[in-house]
Length: 290
Image (cartoon, rainbow, N blue to C red; front, side, top):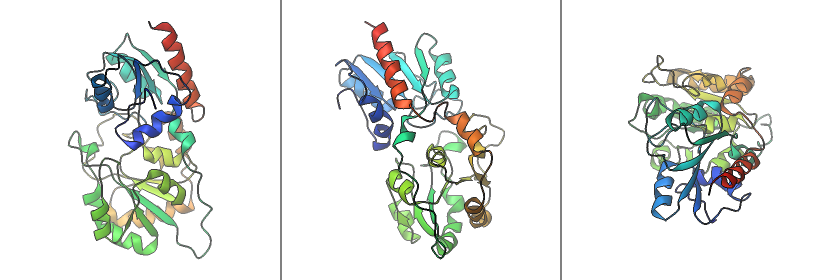
């Protein structure tokens, strides 16, 4: 697809719905990550549009992979899912156009599976962020919660997922857990989703199903980064200790977190029409640029 630069499949999932709706000039590239911006420059593109590849989480740094990050002075248009990420780009690049459009990914997620029938074990998907030594909140919670997984697998049909940049096939196999790499497949199968720090928490919740939020002890409760930490952390029940994980999964399957919709409203300014809204913003920007 001309003009779409995507290193990772999950980046493409956010960009492709937009790229189908616009006819980009040959010098314009749209991407969902900093690595793809570097690649687009190398491939000779001259004008750039960047959309977030998730909810636009940030950690108070100028790391190039997150909203407000360094080395984006040549980007002509930022497309964001919410005001949090938009405001970080506006502050860092006050002369660059920023538009809040929502997340195109939401409208491409598979429909929920049929409700669990009596006598069938619910399908629980568990996922972990890859171990990134940026801030404590980007560290994986797997070492803390791993002891709870064998018992969880005895009670539920447990499937394992991970941040797309890390392959946990061996880890899950060692624990006797099926590894499901594709998040769309997770959405097709799971009744509840358990995760520490990923935009997939909010994507799964947007389909109307429960999530459980893992909070290992090294997450700094005094830091306020917004969104997942901690403004919209009430997307699901939060678990602090592995001994309580199975109980909170049962609770999530049986009850609804009444704040879930509020959390989703913080993360997604719009839950439908994002791709068309983004395409309209791109076309308007193209009309204003030489």
